[in-house]
Image: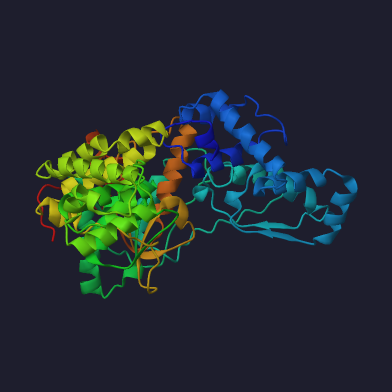
Length: 524
């Protein structure tokens, strides 16, 4: 809401990303004070190509909104709890209350949480922490990458016990993961080992295009289900950013497999995709009356929902097609003159769109959003991310060769529901951030291409180390087989990056990796 109010647009800044940035900044800024021009604020300003003034405006507006509705967020609760512990009486009470403190996932601790721990610890110093510095993700509520080292520096008499035996993964998966993470310098080093079998080599496959990558992954899932008796719930497809799930979701939907996507809206449920789907149905389908409900307001055409219902009744009783009914709308006495004019204009638009239906599907979609005014409507609202989604949608449909336009379009549903698997046997699609602590027999880490993973926003050495830890988390989710795949990354129809990820470069020559470049299509 604040981003829209301020008309601030920065590529890659989603509300979730902004909320995370605000959370981190709060922990480094005096409580209820305007944002200071500190190192962390300037880091995010550079990283997201956002002026410090805009960043401060968002931060200060968010804090002001909280005060006006008299609520605290999670970060406020931490900050205020820490402030309370500065009062001697309060601190003494909690010192005496706890005889020992046990902390799990210590690597996710932020500065203020660590301050709270030190203040409530008291004289007994009975503190037991479990954590993995190689899984410390800075973006996790401001978690501090060096917090495990800081712990050892703070409590000098600490006994350090390294838990290096892994009970989850095969030897080959651990060998690859160890090589990857040991490229990070300054970490508390450890080398994982296991009593498990050596297992299959880690598979790396490189593809000419995105669709080949998607088909390979899903064909391999099908193969493992048939050969090894696996279930869909044994598989996870992991990626760096949510938008990378789209082609996999579309193909899985086509296969009618049960699936779940973490922290993401189903692609077909996005407003802009349903709007384009509605226009496409009107272009190819004479009976697509339902589509009028979606496009009547995208952009606004002066046609209300009641008017659409009247139109639907008129079409049904007159036996006209949609286009015929639009041009004979004067025969519907219930409609106002204004509504009739709007329907006629819509008929002219659809007729013009239909004249272009033999264009390639990508060009047709671009023509639709231009001619309908939908692209301008989104640009005026500064919703450039929705335009990006439409372009991505068009790119994916374009790459689905072998079917004519109508064969592609009729598979696009007009009415959608949230993705809720009907059974517990479903394949998981997830960002790497969301799978910490989870494990799967078979893991596919996809789109391992430069500027995607690691992200092009990884500016500093610390950023790169963070990305490497993310890749390490992804690799070590696998119990039995690990697949890593790469294909060119495109944006707005243009290949942006085709270089393999530096993380792939680090491991693809290892003896426990089966690396190949796939040049022929052998997929179903």
